[in-house]
Length: 386
Image (tube, rainbow, N blue to C red; front, top):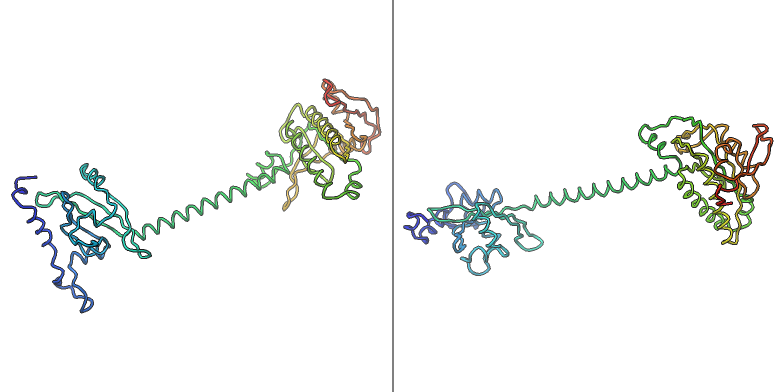
């Protein structure tokens, strides 16, 4: 403390601070009370009240309050002793943290609530160091931040609502994407998503598999339809996994018919080999299921390799479908098959004969195509799934 400060007693300086504000019983010049019985308000106090600030100046040696305006006294009213130091007026104030900030030349801020519920006021208290007549004092200012807190709460609520809506929208988007991927290849879906339409594509080399169940109509009528459809759903779900395993595409189901294709929309030199593996594993799955279930399912499978056209058809209900003689030939192969037999065309046989065991079924007059050499796909060359 400087020599001038030491020459002035601390009690005198406190008196100077207390005398700085007009006494409460005297009205400030030019300020008329609102009512005859209302206590006069000083100009500094009126100014501080108008901006919603509660202000006090305290001695940082013993934290005695040297000056306070009316709002500070109202918010932090002493319980018994009117001369109670600041820590007793502000419950929860951490003096150690306050001094640590002030000693570094920084301000200390703290939030607390004053009043009694439900009319509480959230205040932001700021303490900063000042010097008065050579003595270290602290200015304590408390501001009403209720409106700011309400704005922060509303902003946080809107933010959470926006995040929830974004998550819901993303879930709906993923759901719609999953549904569309069930009826069309991913590359076709991405083209439809990005451009709003798709271009029909011709695939020069693709292999088509068509599977149909023998006697399904009678089975559905004579048995419990709920059980029959549930079993069909289980079988088709297993077929989907087999098709996906070998990089093929399940295009659609039509009643008890199942259509899959290999070689589109991405070209694949092994399309015929992959579709042949799929067919053998489908038949193997049906055999193993029949061994464990009382109801026997028997299927016919036809495969053909050739040029086909793929495109999305429909406007309100999208369906990805394939067209061309290659599809019709696969359907003809399926009708030529006996129960649990896989019949393939000459074009498919030429591509798989080195990898699979096949039986020559001879030349058959195929409707719409004339005489055609056809074969039975029996097993892989290693003997698997014979």
